[in-house]
Image 1 (cartoon, helix red, strand yellow):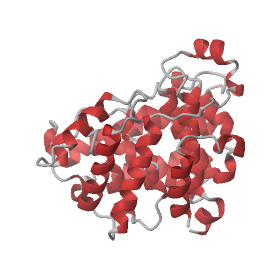
Image 2 (cartoon, helix red, strand yellow):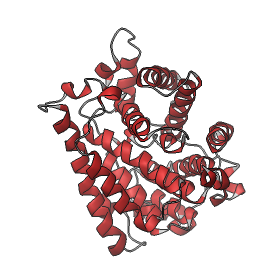
Image 3 (cartoon, helix red, strand yellow):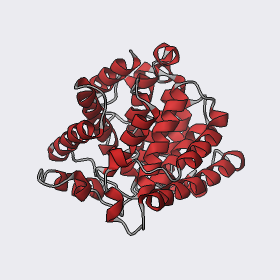
Length: 339
């Protein structure tokens, strides 16, 4: 707890993910040559004016508010969290500000979540492992006072409300765990090893208390084999990431090494790669994530969450942080969890 308060890891992570999101918003759907032609060398990418974010930050805030509401009622439990976050996701889906090219999976699932007479598991898109599952999960790495079981189960539940594929669940769990480790002071150089150990330890653990019978909507014979599929894909991408960190040039598009980030495990790995290439240069990590051929806003968003959790609020210069959209909302949640 002392480390979290001292460096304001929650404020740093939330600010960083929003800055990465805003930096990558104009570059998404373009390849690197087009980005450089339009915006100049990647190491000098400027924060847009105004610094607008996408659904990545909007849904992160929705999740954060849902968690806060659920915890205001008492201990974080599956039913209370699912109800509170479901309401926040529906409100986001209805909002006129939901006009930032949101993912189709999130839109479909949120429409179904409005049908109050059906369990949320019926709304979950069981075959989708899009990065919408883990682009928003950082709050669960930052909320203090959760047990390991609560944090992992809640990370997978928030994914499953929209993205029910086992790889989406595992990648969300891993993303929250990475944020937590960095906030607690883990060294970036040892992070991949810690994540691999965590994945191996949890490979056959299905969080039934949090997920209910979600697994039965897939084709797997039992819940253990269902969730193992997801962890195995995450372990494979972590192996690619481990090789990439020591082999790639920072001047090359990170997507060439670990994927374009449209799917959950690639978003995790490529966001981590951008951070690990520049663990003490947070703005450079964001710029590298934003100048990619893939899902640039989500990649830079995740890189920013990792960098901010690692370095704290002071990672981000005031001339950037003060301009970010939803600044007061980000600060409110950050201050709550840093305290």
